[in-house]
Amino acid sequence: MTNEAPKRATSMRTGLCGLLGPADVDQRVALCGWVARRREHGEHLAFIDLRDHTGIIQCVVDGRLDVRSEYVVRVEGVVRRRPEGTVNPRLSTGEVEIHDCTLEVLAAAETPPVPIVDRVEADEALRFKYRYLDLRRTKMQANLRLRATVNGALRSAMERNGFCEVETPLLWSPTPEGAREFAVPSRLHHGSFYVLPQSPQLAKQLLMVAGFDRYYQIARCMRDEDTRADRTVEFTQLDLEASFVSQDDIIAVVSDAVAHASEAVTGARPAEITRITWADALDRFGTDKPDMRFSMELIDLSALFATTSVRAFSAPSVKALVLSGGGSLGRARIDALIERAKGLGAPGLAWFRVVPGEGGATLESPLAAHLSDDERAGILAISGAVEGDLVLAIAAEHDLACGVLGNLRVHLGAQGVAEGEHRYVWVVDFPMFEGLDEEGNPAAAHHPFTMPHPEDLERLESDPLSVRSQAYDLVLNGWELGSGSVRIHRADIQRRVFDALGLSPEEAQARFGFLLEAFRYGAPPHAGFAIGLDRLIAIFAGEESIREVIAFPKTQSGADLMTGAPKPLADGALRDLGLVRAPAKK
Image (cartoon, rainbow, N blue to C red; front, side, top):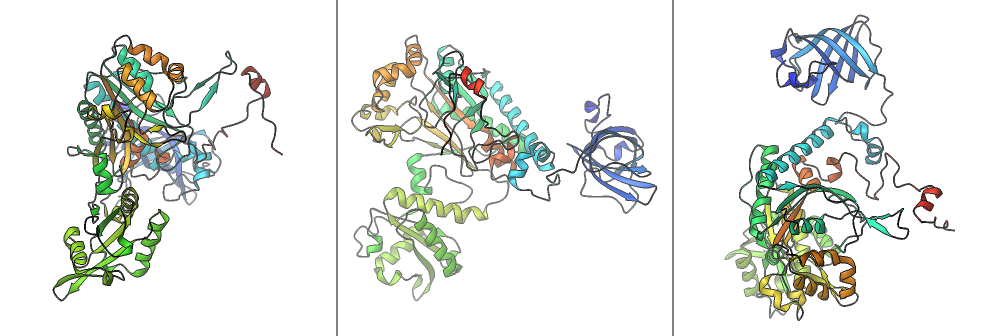
């Protein structure tokens, strides 16, 4: 048999269903799989479509069949060409079929509660409850096998770059990394708890102290937080760390790894990945996760309206974007955009159609008559808008105006992107801290082990919110694939960051004493990164939710509908853990 089929032969079968073709005609084969469909032609002839993970082959059986869909069977017969006029171009095996068949039932099956065919989509809750049936579908088989391809390509790239795979603990000590952790009570130490790791962050830093130089791991991580399309309570990441490297070195390694994975999936390596600063990303795209598949960059009109008499534009910042050809949008569509902007917190959304005028292009809008000639001309000149375009503008605080227009940009621009297009971008120079907590202390924007930018280190105590970090994100099609940073390897700088965060020396010692102590024995400069594999694979698979590329996902509430988890523990198990059941709510 052809197409690598001999490699799959076992004592029960000679090959796989979807790999048969004209080159196998006249060969006797044995195949195993599920009955995808049964059709009977009178009393003496029947057809079954036999399915395994490689595809479907039609089998011709003499006599009636006592089988139904999803029965597990073994079929033995001879490969023949299909009669003229019966070739099925929709199947990879559509030119051949199996004749002179003998059929053995290996396992009977009841009617499945969810459809196995891809053309019928079941309710998600039902799919998750019977996930082992849902995974039989061609799409789900393809998604999980694509996942294996990506994992293999990433491992190959890491090994090629000299990284050593090391497994880190799943039972760990609580750490403040920005998300709620799952707690695991200790049976031997009542009242004490492990946590499931949000990431192997501290463990991999300790591996650098240990001299492993280049570490990686396909790591399982858990966060007890609300889920959404691109986030779930347990996830998988490619985690890596390296010593004696700079930010540029890590960016080069990660860029090579994702390019290798992309090539394994699509057959082509992506172009060199550009990079922009965090501040530039917000100003140009309204987000630190810019979708680079389309342009529509934000435009700054603040200087133009600095002395305006129009109250609608009297604000610290005036930002705009141009929708090419959007002048044809009707008022209903424009009103919907206005409501969307208001729902995101904007005070309003100004709009201007660019239409022909006496001396050239001009603006048409209820606001246009209130603008000066210089303001109207300035909007056209700065935006570059031409006849037929639509200009949208928001006047507000800078971050709010950018954020709302960034949302509208994605809403309007993503509708025209080509299917299967992948555009990466590196975002660098993130803030070290973001805002203040309830006690007035700055909150870490990345995590508290990120090295401040060397140019800003002197302002760590005097003006912490202005300090940049040596942190960097990789973004693909508007999804954050992962984050990384140069780490703090000096105990004095780590203590200064802890102080800025409001951690007392005693609290820092209690929570991170093992790390600070490790630094006393010679910690090399090091940096790392983590790629969210679920997100990367979902984009490669063309899925909008990462749950479609996870074998056994949780629901949005964190429940496992298949097993019923989470479940109450028995009273005896609680006693062993030193716990008592909470009284029932009245």
